[in-house]
Image 1 (tube, rainbow, N blue to C red):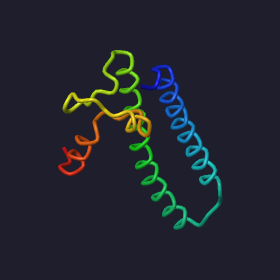
Image 2 (image 1 turned 180 degrees about the horizontal axis):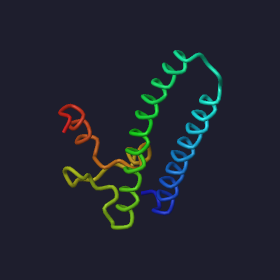
Image 3 (image 1 turned 135 degrees about the vertical axis):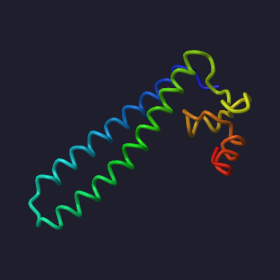
Image 4 (image 1 turned 30 degrees about the horizontal axis):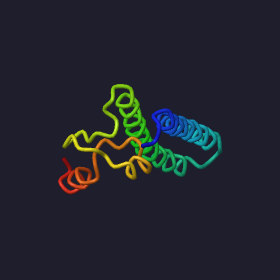
Length: 115
């Protein structure tokens, strides 16, 4: 098993990356807003940006929340235990997705059923 400090560092690094991505996106949006364009092009671009930011915001928040839950599980001793069946989450899965909350079997079931 990977040492807990390594896992914590990996999770915190990913969390920092997500916040940096969000900051860069915000900077890009501000830069686009400052570029002069025709009114109709500006309105279309603004609508596209709003939709894009909404999707990014939802995805970023969900991933950050998953990382935060994984950090809590690390502290409380529940890390590596499937939230659905209580079984072990394999190390190979945690190596790829350190914030995984479900074993691969339960994750597949959840994808199929949506629950």
